[in-house]
Length: 281
Image 1 (tube, helix red, strand yellow):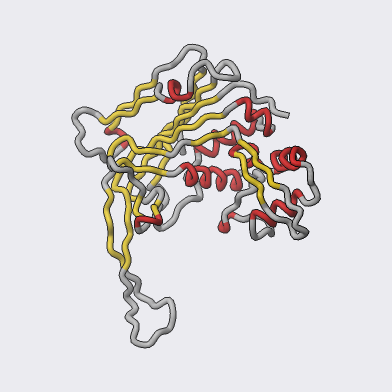
Image 2: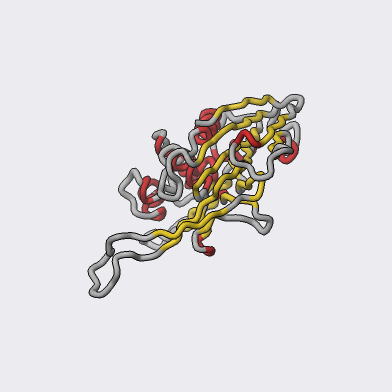
């Protein structure tokens, strides 16, 4: 039973320095950019990081990455069968899935797996939490570094140990993550007030335990989260209008931004919308 009864919109400001926030596999794993040179982080990438933080916080998650897997199941199909085996009614299947996993009742999930007896159930769940793909405020400068390794991966006669490669990273960028939580869909999935607080905490600590060679510790940081709660279910304003209340602009005397201090942040508070400003970690 959901006790979530007021729409929420949120804006998160993230800085990236000498890191690859989200590589594009179709472009040599270079950081994603649009045609105007603005940096991008896909919504799928952001949800993956939120799911990882859910797992770190001890919350049950259906879509687990291999490196974060906390149960014995080797695939989504196996996990669904292990927890939902024998349920044939679609509504009961959806209800049980939402009760079992936080990410399902948050983001939704499509269950379209064949069971071993060929009597699988196909169920689609729409989640209340929507995440936009993040976009940088200013065009980002991407640098590429040629790298080598001093040892062979396999034994091969005549093969040199120094294999050439490339590493790509964003010199500096400020990215904006936007999202919303819908009450009507929360009522359907059983998403609660406590679940919303978990989402906020995951956003606040988004890059904890997320370090890699492409994203060293300290290279990505959540600076601010603007958490905006409406006074009613449908919202007092459109999400677009609420998101636009947070404006991040480059200072007039700055040509190439190198730090978060090179930007101005203007926040316009709207009547009936409760604003909470949360510092990242």
